[in-house]
Image (cartoon, rainbow, N blue to C red; front, side):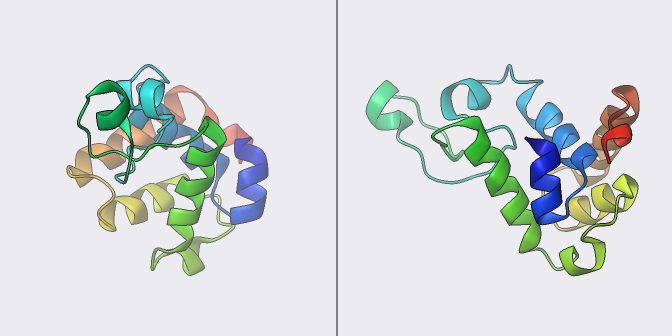
Length: 125
C-alpha cells in the first residue's frame, strides 16, 4: 500500500511507514483500533454517538483511507513541491516537523528518523 501511495504522491515509503508506526503505536493505539487513524490526524468522528467516547481525532472507514489522507495532507504543505519524489527521509522528517505536524517537533523528528533506521525502512524508497 505505502509503495503505491509513494508512487502517486511522491512521499517516501519510509516516511509514510515511520509516521504510521510512530503515531499508531505500531497499530496498537486506541485511535488506530477505533478510528482507523494511523497518523494522529485531527478531525471529525462519530465515537461520541456510537461509543460515548470523546476524541479530537479523525475517523476513517478503513486503514487505506487514513494512509491516503496522510499523503494528501503532505501535498498541501509548503515544502511539498520542493521535496516531492525526493527520497531523503531526513529532509522529509525535518520539513514535516517544522510544518507543525507534532506538538513536540524535535522529539517527533528524532523518533521518525530512529524508526526508519531501526526498521531499515529506507530500503523501500
